[in-house]
Image (cartoon, rainbow, N blue to C red; front, side, top):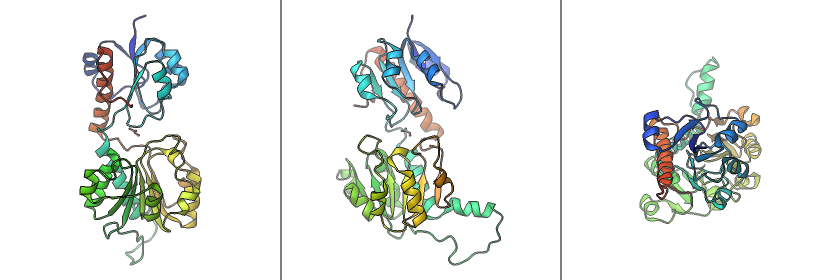
Length: 322
Ligand code: GLV
């Protein structure tokens, strides 16, 4: 059997671009926005030299075994790669790549949009207007937090995306405290970012925004205990990964007034959305669109294809995960 490159979904790239970049036949499992079934994925992987996967596809021992020993690379079209068992791939000599860098600005734009939307109650105001309720300008109606009056933004995980959020927040006049690998580096210092531990970030911030990867250590890092250390009337924004957060604890914190707002692009049990958050006026809920800029999605797809092409040529991958 001639091996192929498996695309779990059609990518936003012209088929000629794919054909000229990849030396193997390309097999695409689904054309639209729906992921393939597990069965289709297992069958499609059989005999593949490369798999280009999305974050909705679980790449584990079963899938790697179904693919077979000729598999050389799994290229994730995402910065996060918690859907891939990297150790299982490594044990089989399979390279894993992701798409860091090309989605930093788009994701930071969305995080900043959510910081503004939750603190200034945009979605609540929109729902109110659409409800048809009578209204007139009032001095206390829909008041929220003035982020530009020195409010503190806490960034958990000052990596590339976190830094892009820090740049925006500083331009808006926010004080920024941050944990993470770059919090003491030259760019953070030049921006006036204050380094802090994760616990300090939660305790000091008016708005906490999450930008760390999902790992066994970070899973459910925002739980009832952490939330209890936050300022009363603060805000939580998550554009990273849903399972970083215990959503029922967040719903309790919204109901009890500990949190004034929560804005989530990602969800603990994605694509299921927590019904208590759906019922909360103070929650903003989006369908995982952090990287959903047209050019960004194309750049992510291109980088995944470039990684596959490099590995199939025998060159080093451009963006291996470790
Ligand atoms: C999107 O969530 C990504 O990790 O790229």
